[in-house]
Length: 328
Ligand code: DAH
Image 1 (cartoon, rainbow, N blue to C red):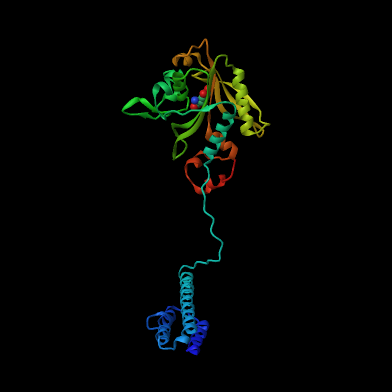
Image 2 (image 1 turned 60 degrees about the vertical axis):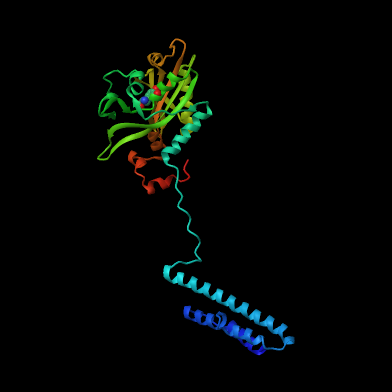
């Protein structure tokens, strides 16, 4: 019997299992109920007790060897099948996940927020669907101001008192109505205008509004703050220039340009909050003064990243967005 066991062991060692039918043959011969190993166990019962110890151990070892062979062979065959069917090469390094990236508009918005947070501005928010009062009237817009005309503003047909806000300046009014100065805030947000850039109409963009109201706020505070912003945003060597301008809700008003390549580029509107606006919000214009400013985030992103078409920001083209992975 020992010889028989040894021969089976050698046979298993040498055996090559190349396909499913050879695997099944192996299973029948060595593992199934009718296997040669089961025959060995049957014969085992008839041998003299003193030989049982050694032979019993050998048959059990043989049984384990057979089972391991079966498992190994079936794993190898499975791998081989996958290889053939799916053309998968398991030796290749794993594919890297295609992670998304932060949208350039959000990147610039975050940067603006962090610059102003450093100098004590807090972040506020307000509604995009707004009453005429907050978007226009309280901001001192004369009745015939062009921004009120149909081509600029999205009105709600059922209620012409409701508009999609055309700027973030609406939140200035809401905050001044609600809170007592000192107020030092920036308000990032989406704004809507019925402007047609080309065949595809572009009807929203992003702004950041700024407001500082307290006793004794001066035009110098406005200039210092915005100069600081320009240097943080565009680099220490950036120069700024203020040009007189007109906005209904600030007096005086100024547009700020930054030095860019060999010329000047306008990046924001600003001014001292008009006393009428303070009074509209219930603030004593003799006691308080303030400055405000507003800038378009798209404009700044276009400058910083040298993008020449506004529509790229909202088309969700992965080839465009991918380029901002890791950009500051
Ligand atoms: N709201 C203005 C616009 O959308 C931008 C602006 C200009 C905001 C001057 C201000 C400001 O707060 O003082 O064109």
